[in-house]
Length: 582
Image (cartoon, rainbow, N blue to C red):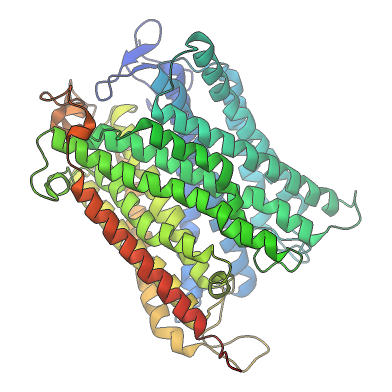
């Protein structure tokens, strides 16, 4: 049976039986058409948002690179807002709903319940995204382009707040089928433990509920102010409530990304889970501590007590950091043990050098792990410290950190997942296979250098964020940052190369979707799975701890060494800001 009510240009068709089921030739999962088709729908919509936000990834850096200075300040803020909302919110949340459907009912082998609600959620989310984009693009004085934060008392168009509320309501509606499928699973199998991927998706959904409630509260509050139902707005209250959604949405990204890491390293890399209990514990730690990390956005807030700052940026924050350290060890350790189990682990790093680096799904997800850890993760812990935050807060270094986490980490992992789904759920061979194999390395190198340059100009020269021009002119002053110009030139060149590499991904994905050939019998499995099989033929019954993980231990020591050096260097830079004497 082919066909789906969603079918457009043959993009949703697949070979299902009369009851709508098929067996995935790669994962061996029993998949129902309802689950798969709605996962596709949200995933495709996410890619559209990626394209829109990516277009503004051209104009924003070409403005901040003052050698070009493309846009005037008023236009710059509009373009920056379009870039932020489409890439940090719409691209991510549409993908995360897709991941909930994949990690929940698809992995569990269930139909997607109440598909009408899923469709309504998708439509509501699209309507909200369109309203927000329209409100930003048509911003005129006295309204201000909202950027990501839309900080009060700077007013944005009332339609913007309406769109934000509608989008968040749509995400809530779209998540309901996932919650229902999880409830059905536990009701029908009360003593059965959820698979780790499904457990990660469930934790993601709980954090999402927290973020959405905060977003609905803050944007409704601001909307009531803008339509003059309430006469004034408390800027401090707005900031505090805003970061429930502002930080929370990025933590949804984090947990969804880690869930994708576990899933794809297992399927395309042959990884084993070293300890499900330990990995589940790390996910649970996120539930209690991850959103407390939002405190580092408020460390310069004058109404926040020092004790609150210290608690949230030390003891509470360490709970989330400890969880991340667990995942940072468990994922490469699982990959090492799994590959050694397959006889691919000669020497200290043979398990890594023999890995399928030519497979863009594998390389993108593993590079995501590495770059997120070394660039995004380390800097996140450093800038989350009360004292060190003073050298990061509101500088361009913060933007570099965001790109280290959201782009090099989450976006990179999600791109790998899309390439995987194109070959499995869409049943296509990758178009432009040589370019596809090369693409992850181009993206990793160009975006990695771009993020580092942002950090350098922010930390070394104090270049502020969210401004169109600083190197040659700071309005109202005779001060300039001309000394930062060489680093800005490096930033500008690599930012444009990163845009090109991002565009290559879209070209590969679109060409595969529209012109990719159908897979023959067993071709997808042969191309995606390590050694062409999901489970190793020999030693399948051996426990995972029967295999060495010394390579991961060495890599962990390297990571900790880089962390200590980065931490010490940031304290040194802080010490240069003033002289302390009697």
